[in-house]
Image (cartoon, one colour):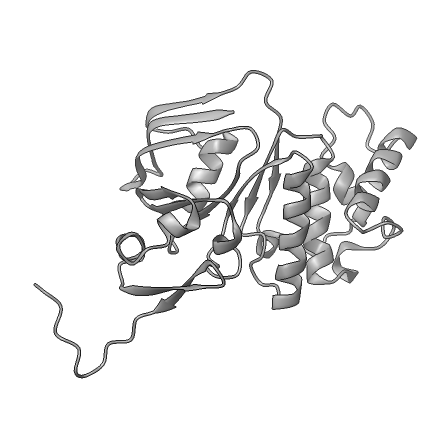
Length: 251
């Protein structure tokens, strides 16, 4: 779908991404993890095409359709728009400001698919956190994309909503949608995904969670030592808290 080769991105200062090689294939379900300021969102925008690298190349498959789900924290929830109108904003090439019957029907269908049937006339601020996130997933899906990019889809939601969204994303992936998302949630989201990319300006590691969520890769990614336990066959990342009897770190 998309191939990044030796991609470096910057915003007029030091490189935010440096010499990144990454391939996105049909059917992938990938999580991009790393600390704040590590370049996760910039990598997502490079895949989307809204950030142009200062060196390297980004090659997209001809005719590739991409949907984008922003961070919910970036949304103005007081904006006077209904759920149905918000979803219909994904339509391109509209000649009139109002929605056609076909556009209404298409929006209602995707809302129904995501468990939001009957909520099209409700104001977006009147929804729960999980419902609000589903609205923007619905908007991304309205254009029938080949690839959906999501920026921190579980940020700011409670544990129950996080599990609900994870199950939804699993269902979308099983139905054939390729998904790439950024997340800071190593245990709640990242460890459940089939493929991870650890980023801190450069790609530190990528592969299955058990191969990537290791103390060495995590320390290079986050700059701090972390411990990894295997619980129920899945990696569980915990902060390492040094004790008085621990030997000092090597210089």
